[in-house]
Length: 261
Image 1: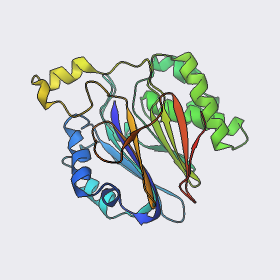
Image 2: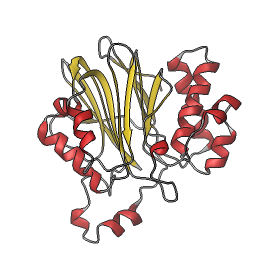
Image 3: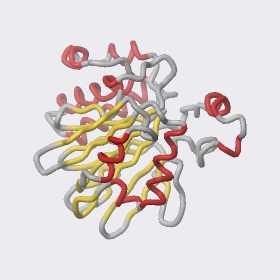
């Protein structure tokens, strides 16, 4: 279970600039729960640049570098809370990337063995870590390849097949490519990790905003120069909920938001 931040802007900016310092600090403070590593993806004019670490964003100095000194016109940030039993290790840190797309996931798809069995031989051979999220990424790659490289069609097909096979899973994800940032908000039957939250925070008032009642909610904020999407944990003026069980495409060129599903 994790937190996600994604944006598309009209110019290269850092993740810190996109949210502004107070909201960015609030987002980063969610590492008090989601402290099993972090990762970023962005575009540098040549291709995707991806950074990740198994160290908490609260203590890793490279997190500040990646989120404040690496401007990009489109990017995503991931704070990881490892699913029980899955190691905190570099190969399990999001986002996962093949150079064409980068995917970061918030949820749990189980059983992992069943998900892995749905991969192509190429997808299984490419695996490096233990997570369901990496297998989700490889499955998306498989479906895009089967769609002749059409990222829109491949992602929608992947989400449809996975939601049918794993109806209780959260498929919430962000997928970044040269042409678009995709937002997957599919989680209607997923259960929030309430027992784990109460274990971490015996005082309910200390649990971060939105984690008890809207754990899987994603919100979007639009302005003339930037579109931002974030997991629950932030609120305030301008944020609107992303539609349930939807897949959005935010175009890199003009920041238009299209509902694909």
